[in-house]
Length: 499
Image (cartoon, rainbow, N blue to C red; front, side, top):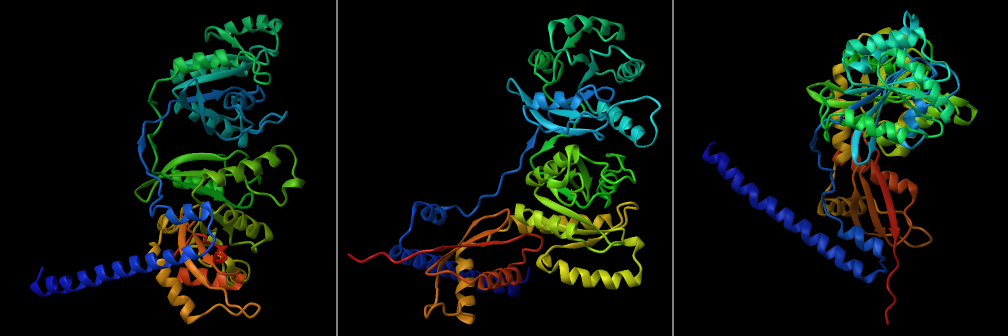
């Protein structure tokens, strides 16, 4: 470093310190001015809030994995719901409702573990049923212990015997579950399952909860403290929800990112019904991707499994931090596409737009697409756009910087001093229009939170929606916030009465 450079640094340091002192002085003066106004406890809490509320990320040991397998319609998903204590897995009195392997966090007697639900396993299956069977086999490979569910009313079948052979090859601890054993008479019928050669069958009724507690006690004993097969649970992997209309390519994108057939992909729309999550290494980072069922037109027009799948998708979005909305460029942007994007905005999650099937786009369709984006997606012009092909993996690497940018914006915090200086300059250059002969003033501004960035303006009167949108637009111009919604709230306060 040259003496000249050091000299420049010495000149800059006092300026920086002076700027900080000016910001702090401004904040102190503005806050002192608020003493003249009626403030409640919530106002005080907002003003006292710390500058940094970011969640700490930490590395946690991998939770042990318990997989549930069996042939179709033996009650696997009903057992999942009973163990979780809530209706999470899609259950319908039709074989084959569950198609992918789906993970849930569960707890029993203080022990946390990962519960994996699978589609029905059948030998010699073809087409989509073969894909479902492969997912069940992968689930067993990635499990520390297995619950093999059999219908006690049907008894052992040739399919069950095929499953047993598959389980023996896996060399995993297996508990044989005799489901639909609703009374003691059914318990006696469970004795026929000894013939499967997996040891003692445990009679349970997933529907009524009978025997499930005893089964879980045994399952917990079979699970190790730390998983021997699962990846470590990072607090850090950011959670990415894949959203879009049915058959837009969400599952193809997840499989291509994972480098394996992670979820069932089929030309039939609506193949995915449960959200499926997977830790994936992409761009040198670990991410947790959630592939969700396609959101159909209107929830109230759906029935059975599709109705609950839409609710699951909304729940998956709530658990995510950033949403990647896939849009099919070969088709016109639809009302559904816009509604899905609005769902992300309502949830306050970061947003990335992925235009899929870009390799199939011709010049004429490209012109129409740009016009559609201008008209229908103007309200999310701040969202990063990525042009990809989920099928071929083309430009998939561009997804990572877009995700990182959106999440960085989602976490961004503006120091209170700088925020108030920004507002003061803004109001001086563009004052709020008069309302009823009065001009509302902004007394103080603070960032109440991140994820998404939420700002609170203490004002002397109501700010027009257009003016709030103007503030949001200028915040984006000055501070970026690319890829995240911004919330600007007001707290209108009146002056204290002089006594």
